[in-house]
Length: 501
View 1 (cartoon, one colour):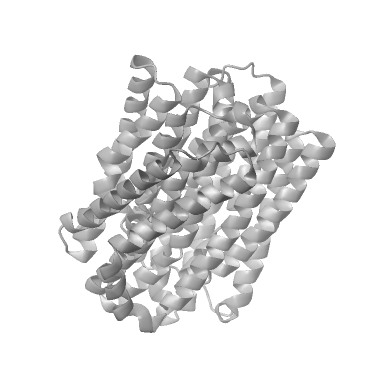
View 2 (view 1 turned 90 degrees about the vertical axis):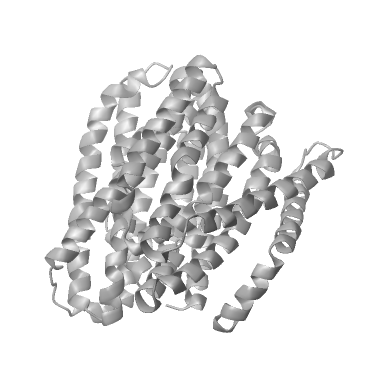
């Protein structure tokens, strides 16, 4: 597992996600034009409920990936297929559980929205649940592709998925003006892309096919199951945080406001997802380094990953703070723009949440989900309590929901997740992590101050070209400040790893 291969996988994943984001923006604009903002709010509500129902895929994929590293390095093909058989059974239970819990969730629909829910809405939610459950068909092959450091296969399947899905969704909107057909297209595209990924992975792992299936040892199964439980709680807490935000807005603020907010959250999620695709393939690299060279070398690599990733997170957060209102204005129109402070708070929230990713891939790579099981429960409880306080007592509306998410992350994730890997693998005091973290914050603060002076007299953005110029300006200023603040670190990294690239 070389650095070059990991970078190639990351670029392939990032490119696939960029293509997905472009198509998502096109589909969203057509959705609003044809069906309107109220249906956009209903779609966001359905998505929030399904997050609870599926428990965000239960974290099984990332919880089990670490178990593949050793048999792949040793060429133990029988054990690999044994793990695949275990994963396949888990995913079948996920599909069944999603369908059953989705049926139960139908009864809650009238209490989660300020619009009337009738038979038509119930049937559409049922179709939404079925469409979502198809994303888990053959999902075990995505896990194997990651462990094999062949993420480009998953990227190829994702490109097929989003292209076919966007084509079908646009057709459903343009020619039939049907939300039902819009959902049916998701189901068809999921099945086709998962079959395609299964074919690619099996084609690239032909030597595995002749191996007999060997059940994992009792010790391996115990560790896998414990990590799955930890992964369930970890992902479920994230699902509670994400789902609670939209549901609280729907109940206390209104479905129309949720529709407006969903466009902001979509932009933020697309950026978050794109950065996730860049760093996600590095879990295999850092896991392999730890297995072959030990915790100290893994720690050195972690610091490199954190520094590089903090650059992308900083640029994206600054882009949200200074450009998200302009993007919404140019993309959907002035009526979809929320108060300015919403964008600023989303940017702060984004920075805090996404900068956790290096620690999260370390947890996934080292198989430490079990060690953060309690954190997940505390995070979800703090988020719900803080959001309700900000909404019901201080009447802050959407801003209160975002602030509640920020409070829960600062109270738990910022320190708890890195503590697990710093104590369990690196054997290094946590203050060294916060030294990296605080430096990233100072760099963003300096850049934001410079951009505030730069844009204080700038004209209002009214066209796509003005928007592109503003985005490019944010990127250039952020890059210059980041390089200046970390010049010595870049030199040390090149002297150590440059020859391996």
